[in-house]
Each structure stands twice: as C-alpha cells, then as structure tokens.
Amino acid sequence: MTRDIVVLSDPQAVADAVADRFLTRIRAAQERGEVPQVALTGGTVARLVHRQVAARAASYGIDWGRVVFWWGDERFVPAGDPDRNEVQAREDFLRAVGATRVHPVPDSTGCPDVVTAATRYGDLLRAEGGGAFDLVMLGMGPDGHVASLFPGFPQLDRDDTIAVPVTGSPKPPPERVSLTFAALNRSKAVWFLVTGAEKAAATARAWAFEGSVEETPARGISGPSVTWFVDEAAAG
Picture (cartoon, rainbow, N blue to C red):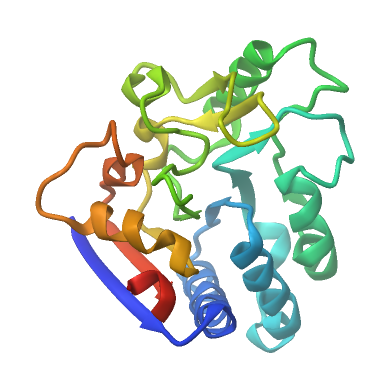
C-alpha cells in the first residue's frame, strides 16, 4: 500500500484540488478504454468537491454515460430526503453532467427495512459492479469513523459481505447502510477528504504508528493507494 497526505490551505482548496484530480483520473481511465466505477461519499467537503466537478467538467471531455457511480454509505431514510448522500450528489453534479449509471442505496420508501436494503445493495454490486472500484472517496468523522463504520461497532469485523445494516448510529439518522472494509478496500485508489480542526485528533490517530481500527475505523482502509486530502486545520 502507498499512503500519501496532501495538505491544502482550507476546504475550498481541498475541493479545487480533488475535483481536478478526479476529472483527470476519470478521463485517463476512459482513454484506456475503461468504464470507471466510483464510490462517492457525503458531507460538507464532498459537496464542495462535487460542485467543483460540475463547474469544471465541460473542459475534460468525459463521457458521463460511461462512469458508474455507487456510494460507500447511505442514510436509510425516505426517497428524496435531503439527508441522503444520493440526493445531494444528484443536486450538486450528477444531474448537471448527465450521469446515467447511478446506483443509489435502497431507501426506506421502497425497502421494508435496513437489513433488506443492505442485502439488496450487496446483491446489486455483485451483479453490476466491476469487481473493484477505480476510486473510493471517503470522509472521516471527528471520532474517526468512515462510511458508516463507527468505533466499537460490530460492523468493523464483517469481512464476509459487501454491505451491512447499521442501527443505533451515534450520528443521526440512526439507521444506515454501509459498505464493509472488504468492499471499500477493493479499490485501485481511496481518497480521504478531511477538513476542520475538529478532525485533527482523529487524523493524528489514523496516521499514528500504533492504534486500533476499533478506536479509529479510518485505520481499516488499506487499498493499494490511499491519499488523504486535508486542510491545515485537520492536519493539526
């Protein structure tokens, strides 16, 4: 595994840098004849990134009908709920660029419970996924959680499935669906998007020589290439 950290001045600088790298990576993959599979994240800095992607996309010549989008986690709430990462991403850039191969996590409107939603999403990834992501983008909480894999939760130890239900989330809403480490780490590249002084302690724990995934789930990300894009406040 290669691991790098890129420190930028503030959240907007992170968004600008990540958007350009994202567009460059997708274009290069298509030039190689590939159909990139991308797992998106939610959160404030992700929304900044997505808006910059929409603003810059026209100059990159990407065929957005040949990019497949997934999510690393999602809130189990009704369809169209503004808290859903999918809704935010569609508003911020997917609709603007004309993306058509978009695979949202099942919502509570069309799915009876969060367990079924996780099972269905795992089945969809097996059926429609490429076996590995070209890119996974992740945020990180002040507690060190990634996707919806929280410190001390049993989902941290699941390596026998793609997607898991999460109940009793310490961050509302309480029910979520998350990809497991086994799925997230099947990626050519993972990019962390982390900003704000409240993330500095978790960033330090994630990069420390010693520590546990149980305490800081971000330590469980171990794909072949992991890059952290952080602002000065999060770098601490």
